[in-house]
Image (cartoon, rainbow, N blue to C red; front, top):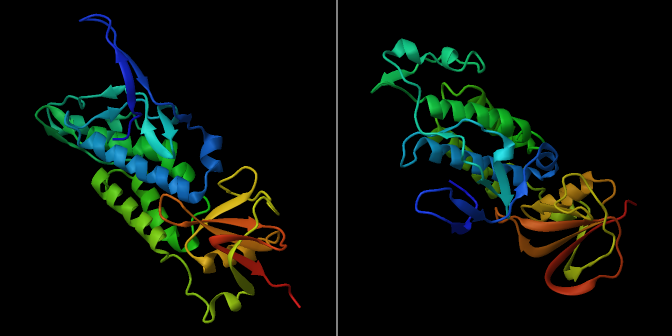
Length: 291
């Protein structure tokens, strides 16, 4: 489970309060979530799935996040980390028979479920796992994952959303596997339509190798990784050209040597073009004027 790195601790007495100093993270509020690129939100979805799986299979047994809200988490270098564990429950509800483990009764009809859990050793087995899945979907995944997802990945995204909506049928292992599968589809570029037969030429772009437009023709665009320029990630040059074509302000694209957490290339869309600077390893895609 991802948690902020402990940088120091203080135990003033053999028995007494314990103070911990952890690495600083950025608060995770709704505005911040919706401003992230879809790729970064996919990273959060993977982090959530990993945390859920750890809570369900921890060395202490199945744990419940009784206060599963965005305020309990921070972003550290783009990675989601659990920062507040004082409301973690280490036991599941007591029971004397399976009838005591009706999820609708246990959660006061606050989640859509018809599931009745098994009473195992006087505890409702699986309660914590299902409750965590429901809260994670309600406060995280259902809120941000569908927005701006690539169209061809929509079936995979909706499958995950359905899993968080109906935790009766999916456990955390299946959710984690499905999330890894979604990431793999995105990383592989399989979501992209077949490339045009003659590549960038048919898209109306000219490639200028070893070229850059540093600090020139920058503009802001939707879901950019930067607040001052249009910075996006692309699978390859063809996707970069397609993104530029869809943006009426775009006239050129610079592809550098930086990559995101999935290995995709960082691209900077430009709203103009002039004589470029030489920069080895960079590529400049220039949209040809319509004749």
